[in-house]
Image (cartoon, rainbow, N blue to C red; front, side, top):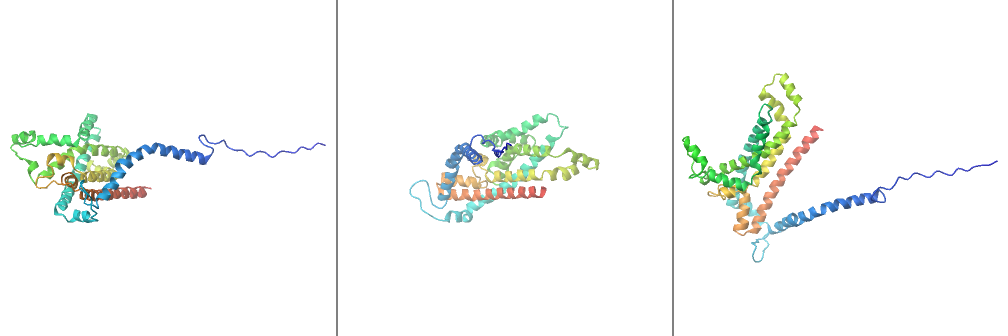
Length: 316
């Protein structure tokens, strides 16, 4: 009688992953690859962004002028930001610029987006491209063009207005009209960008909502207030915060058109940073003012982050 003994079966072992001896090796190689791809960008950011920010933070606590020795002054520069009457006025001018620019840019962009989004409008692609063109033009170049248009002697705008009996004079040298004028140039330059964002938001609204509202007898205004406007809530908040941040950083058109005048009526925070750092050689104070502006911008970004976070939670 012959007995056979069965050999125990060998446990199946999956083949090793490609690029490593196992899950640990693959994870390490993957991380190493990610770091390798990110390294050039991280080096550039560290050299040209990170280190200058650290240096500017150190300078903000000194009386650095770019020449000679620096002395540590502590928080004196930051205290001066909120106690110097000229700086406080520049902060007020920046707030006025933001209050004028942000709602006007949003309203103009939204109205034009609604018009271009209408299927009954012919040549929509042409109008969309034409209205977006000012955004791709350099703001300094656009400001130069507007300075000639607004010139009281040779400007076409004054010439056209005089033909209908209106004379506005030199608005860029008027302490009352100078700020609205630079805001007008900024709105003309940037509304195309915000318009495209609104167009994207409008095209994401389901057509079934408009059909249901139309069946209920809602006219165009009611469809806008009950469907379009609520559905554009996230887009409106995004455009508003982006426009507000852009307003806090206004410099180009003000430097070209008015240089901060007349009588400092258009002197904004960024103009003050430029004047303090490059004209008055107060690099320490300019650095402190830059960090105040940075903190204000970060707070606005935090508001945007919290707003969209809560909207996402409520939607889920």
